[in-house]
Length: 195
Image 1 (spheres, one colour):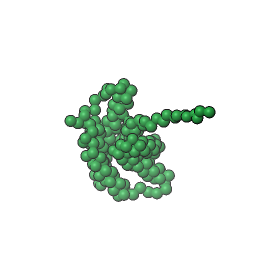
Image 2 (image 1 turned 45 degrees about the vertical axis):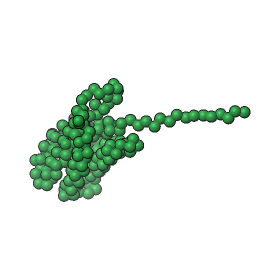
Image 3 (image 1 turned 135 degrees about the vertical axis):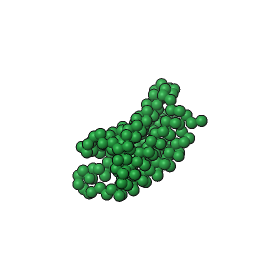
Image 4 (image 1 turned 90 degrees about the vertical axis):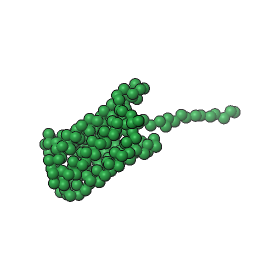
C-alpha cells in the first residue's frame, strides 16, 4: 500500500501594517486636535476616550505585524505611539470617572518624553519619503507646542490643535497613497521619494 502524502500551503504574507496604523493615527489625531484647538467642548471626551483606546489597540496589532514583517521602524513607531493613545485614553477615562485627579506636571513630563521620542523618529524618517518626513515634522511641532503650552503658555495648545489637524490629514494622505498603490499595483499619489 502506497503511503499518502499531504501538503498544506501556508501563506505567511503579511500586509503592510503601516497603512492601517496611519489610518487610525490620522483619524484619532485629527479628531483630538479639534479639542486642543478649542473648536469642540469638553463633552468631546465621550468620543475621544474610546477613539484613543481603540487607536492604541490598532497600533498594537500594527506593531506586532511590523515585527512579523521584520520592519523595526513600523513596529517601534506603532508600538510606542499606540502606548501614547492607550495612556491618553486611560488618563482621561480615570479623570472622567473621578478615579484620580490629573497631575498637570506629570502630563507635561509625559509629553516631553514623547517629544524626545518623536525627534528620534523624525531623524529616522529622513531616509523614507517627503510625505512621511512632513508628517513626523508636523507631529514634532504638535508635541513642542503642547510642551510649551503645558509649561505655562496655554494659548500654544490651540496652535498644536490646528497643526494636529493638518498632521492628521497628512497621515490619511499616506494611508490613501499606500492603499491605492496596493490596489492599483502602482503609485497613484506622490509621496516624494528622498534622493
